[in-house]
Image (cartoon, rainbow, N blue to C red):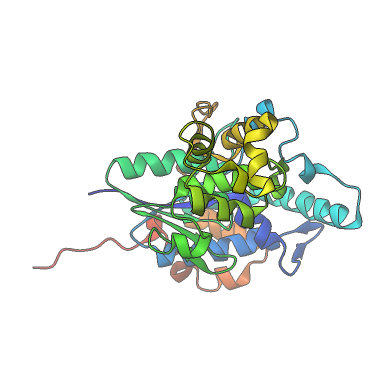
Length: 316
């Protein structure tokens, strides 16, 4: 039987759950732990036929290519940056507890020293689909949208959004996932501190790709095939062929945003933790953290997880 995977973006959901109403045990904030456990239970129950795998971020290989990659996330200058940094620090202290709880629930966890979660998500997705399986991507990170295709669904639990191959155009404004990658390369990604080519925002990049199909089609049409009249082009599009620096930036950005770029290295120090399900240890864990709503009826709470489901008995 072909495998079905539920790939969960650990830190994306963890940061979201940490931004909820604060819960404290002693000096430790625990809202990320508590809400992560509640959230993962909800989606494991919803996707009963899928194997859940939580993917964690490692250090990104992209920083070797572009030192400024995500550098903005480390700033602590403005009040907003200081507040966000404090939340991140609080969340980092909770991550080991989340990972420990997942082990006791028998949930697989994957990480690599040089890979972000979306890189590993791409690798696992492509392997699963190549073997005839299907995948649900559980994340609010739109970068994962480029993995949507036959058998691959993107589900955002933060805003309750679902994107499939059928509604991809409606959601992104683009026909293909390759165009989505090129849109990000043209417009840049402020969240990841990746500047665009300049003069073209997301709306302009979508307009450009809907009209010309791809960056290569455009440059070939202008420079070689002469099917595109250069003189009638908007100034921002003319600059794409007049300014060589823009082509260089676009090419660099493709490698930064494309989760399947040939520049992606192999995973280093790949860690796969299949977990060791243990209801007694998990109960004690929840009791220490005063997660009373979980321990109140623990057997029912655990029953949705594969390691604790009742086996199906054949009937005559």
